[in-house]
Image (cartoon, rainbow, N blue to C red; front, top):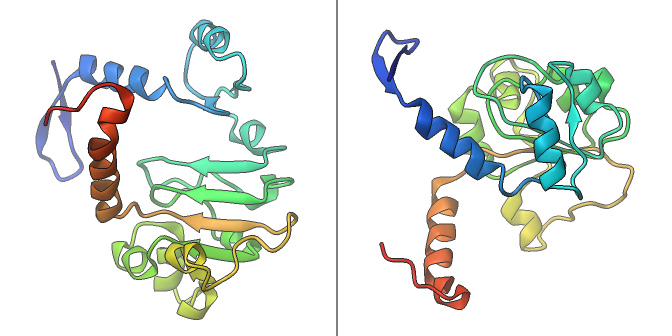
Length: 196
């Protein structure tokens, strides 16, 4: 068991086996995954298992992972601008999941900025567009829509295939609870009722 010291100085247990199990579980449902910091032999084993997925070994070359992509998803836990606007040459959809992951120019490049819930993004304060808001570079009216507005038909989603949409997903806890309830309620359709 390793000890991890968090930024606040608190020591926490780090169970390498649990982390490895979580990674393997997550890898059971990929679609168009880019692998970084992984030995090439592991990547090739994964490629054999998922023949219909285009894996690119980028070895920390984020530009290689981004250029030519239709869809970009960043999901890092750090505060590092790993996505540069100049690399976005083909993509028409960007999903921002974590913290400060992209430079401000990525949001400026967008034709539409959509959030799952703008107030939550603003108040969380760690994501790129919330930092832009705090710096006075982004206003409430710069947010095209919240996700529910598009889903309910109150605002148009994609209007053209050549438009670049920036989607900032905070990950609302009520959505997680609704999904869990849906899975539980429908588990009998898959042969086994989940016991919780």
